[in-house]
Length: 102
Image 1 (cartoon, rainbow, N blue to C red):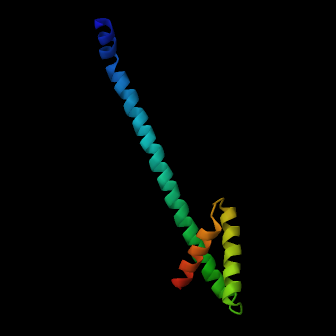
Image 2: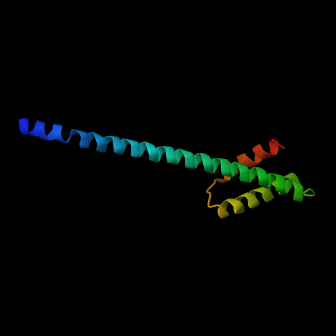
Image 3: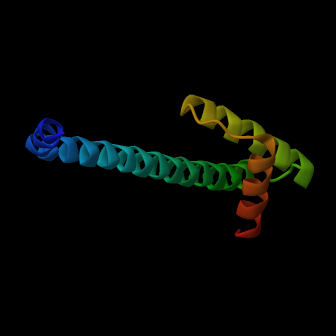
């Protein structure tokens, strides 16, 4: 029994170091994931806002439905270039929000 306790006490610092490294690694991965989601959401919003302004400037003779469709198409095209995934519902919500801020 004392041999086991001696072995554990001799390696206690290494065991604690390994556990702390594992916990900090996990926390680091989670922080990175949250940060990437934040950046992607911010980028999506900026793309949609710029696209809505573009459509408003270039498609003055279009109806509101045609403008919305054009904004959907251009936003999706731009996001595919940036390799961003977005759902149809999320895109529509972002477009409506961007239109309301004009």
